[in-house]
Length: 152
Image (tube, rainbow, N blue to C red; front, side, top):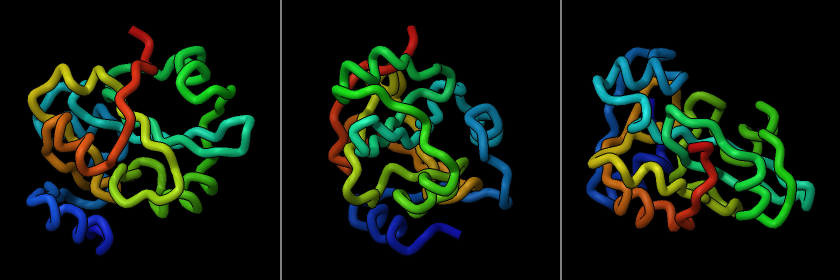
């Protein structure tokens, strides 16, 4: 089930989530298979915690890895992947279903690699969903800053 706060944001922006059987899209590979798209089109949302105590939500192509040096350059601090409990406490979503919409008090970083695709699919707050939208729509809905943080 799509969380109410995500449903409200989607409705406001004229977007609709694709929903699947529970637990069917927890990884980029499984989500791409289920939706029938390239793995890179899955916009995985990962929470990082900086040495400065701040959290950063990186939204990236599902087929690439985050480059630590680029993240440090963009955030001004060394970062680590947030723990499962931190992710849920800060975003309100469990890993595998982190949604980039409606996350308060966290800077959202949108990797430019997502712009390579006509449509990308971030999760809608659970591990059985995806929201088809353009990179421009993703930027508009999240207010995220466009960065280059992936290994190429």
